[in-house]
Amino acid sequence: MIDKNVVSQIVSQWLEDKEYFLVDVTVSPDDKIVVEIDHAEGVWIDDCVELSRYIEAHLNRDEEDYELEVGSAGIGQPFKVLQQYVIHKGREVEVLATDGKKYRGILTDVGDKEFTLTTQVKIKPEGSKRPKLVDQLLTFTYDEVKYTKYLISFK
Image (tube, rainbow, N blue to C red; front, side, top):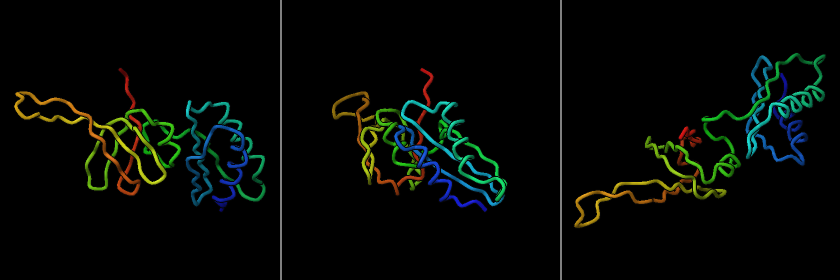
């Protein structure tokens, strides 16, 4: 079986001096290799082809037969690495907390241990007849969430 760490090192070499970053590498027991990369401005197919060829040049098909798939981290898929939070700062995301509650809001701050989401909640001010929308800041540590994902808007 092909070693995931070997593939990760090969990808890291290709990523040097590029603005892409590695999201995930998986290797199945039948040697299907899946490499996911991302970039703040999206992933170009030409770069996926270049990375695929680079990996193939550094693995020996005579030693082990494998299937290779190189692509971008899926739109609408949960974030897997901190850099995905960073590139989506200022955008609308959905967070599923470990307590089962879902939140939608703008990803306003990203740190090494936690991130902040700005949501809108209805609050009825004292003496008012109607509730009004107010911004509320929610801070989560990464282990307090099951997933965070970018929300696609067609507005």
